Length: 387
Picture 1: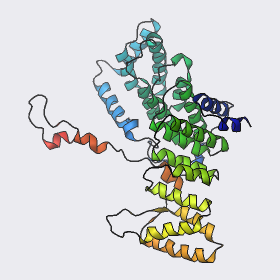
Picture 2: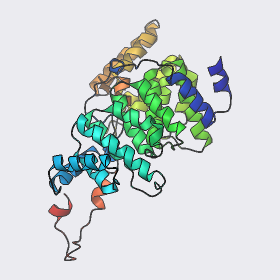
Picture 3: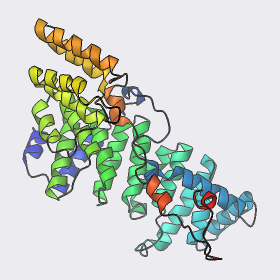
Picture 4: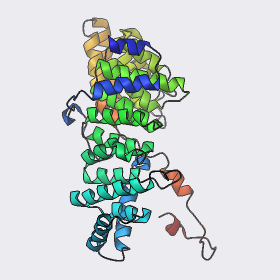
């Protein structure tokens, strides 16, 4: 009853936070990776490499190790001595340390240095270098999500993780391991620390709620979405797709249709399959058949992208029309045409939703590369600036 009253009231940040906290902290066990039906594949899962920057981080680690004036062991020993002697920890020393860590033992030292550094600099964070994302990338690389959760929740480090990227990387790390309740807990902490949500945060938040797939997570998703719209946020298509999928899983086709109707450019493979599922659950079967018919009889030019349907979704369509002979015969005909046209994918709707998109900016970065040498002011050869 309390949850229903919250959902009916105005969706303020405080209300969302209270609901999140009430659901997370009673000690619910994590869902576990078994709930994730699609293969994990690469370590990046929901976030693109433009956000994760793991390759850039790993290259930097190599460069730092190569340019170290002493051995790694000596450097770490010197830092341990500074801690023991209560000497000031410099920003560059912490940054170097985080690029040198390769084990759990190294991370224990790093955590101690972080606590000391933050205690010495907690009042000088404005405009300062953000160590949060760097630490999270390190935890991501070393599979140390427990350490990341521990530190991001520690009140003694309040302000150290003041950026949304730190929280996003951690939620992504927990998501790929199926630890959805822990990811929800991190999202709760993010609201508690008044860290502004980014577009990626909303994607992660709705994806976490979708994976939890419960009436409570549906209410959280709905409240977060309405709060964002009240603030004038324009939610991404990807975030909205997770919200639609969750509504469908909770047998709320009217809500799913309402969210779907607000998606701009709903022509992606995920959108077309969600549209089919909305029609299935809403019993709009004649319109559904028209959609499939249009997909098979559309522009046959090989330059025009055709709609592709998940085998899983088509199976559900057939299950829905099996008791209507005329519709079943029509569906089987269209199903055959879709296969002949190569418009059926074996990927489940879940796999399509959780697929990491390609980086949009990858080609733009190349175009913005320097083409003139700073030393000679002569044009660089294409082989040089293309690298």
